[in-house]
Length: 156
Length: 104
Image (cartoon, rainbow over all chains, first blue to last red; front, side, top):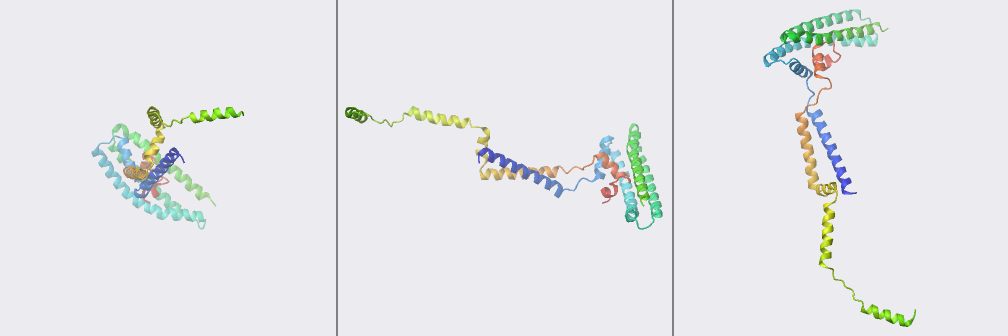
């Protein structure tokens, strides 16, 4: 084996050891970034919020997330057994669907109220842009969600 | 072959003296050539000769591991979704990953 081929082999091994160590360090010791934190950081940067405004925005979000936790627990309790039963095709689900739709409407209302409160804290010229962007996305997701439920409901 | 020719050849061979003395200039020239050749060898080959010693190899590997750990600890893995999508996911109850992502 020539010295150059030994050198290339050694460098390849060193590269693999480095890549493996990096992957282990990142995946093994660090949790992925919390989406809530990543989202809030995006909001601060995108709308160029000063510290005081950002603190108020954060406070609003913490209150919302707390409320959201409770509603998600209710949805988890209602939605998943509902979907499971629908998939198992064991019994009629009309009442459960009605309850789920009710919960979804409550969630949507709560989200819309929250986003409008957040928009009020943003610079005036950006408020509408924020609502069009985020509230628009929520509405589109609601439509897709309802469509999926309708398809499930129609399944024999 | 004529016997006279053989005698004259013998005489000639007897007169021949082997000169095994090497001129000092010749030696200098040889060393200069060796030095020039080693200077002109490819840099990778010289690097290989320098680096491929057990202690140096171990040092390089240890440095690579330390650098990877340092880089990994200071650069947390990025979420697969964009920060915008992470925000939408965190606030929208209709996002497909809302419950799993926010309330795992």
